[in-house]
Length: 116
Image 1 (cartoon, helix red, strand yellow):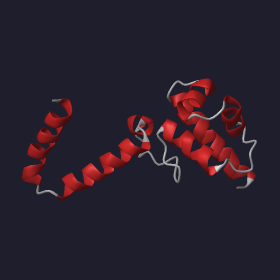
Image 2 (cartoon, helix red, strand yellow):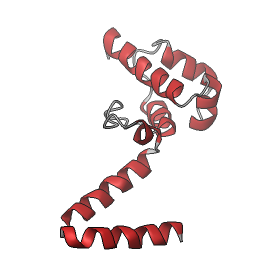
Image 3 (tube, one colour):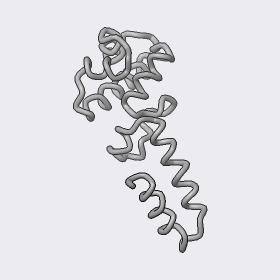
Image 4 (cartoon, one colour):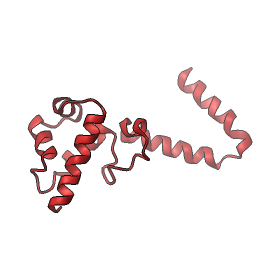
């Protein structure tokens, strides 16, 4: 990871954290990494953050660790954990495969199950 890539990674983490209104201490707590590690990542101190650290930070911030800027420009989606975004992608693919006349009924059934 060159200097520019390291700074871009730091910017992604910092911007996502600030979008959530979190302090560095909040991100450390939510991700399970130390406060000093969060600070070092955001200052681009590391030549390359350890993959395990990167995964924890991205997961806490709802970012795709392989493409952390890939949130479709949706600030709500950007705040969702990766697992939720993945589930929504699968669900969206399934719904789009249904005939249009069945989609609304399926969505209503799903909503009824979720929100009871």
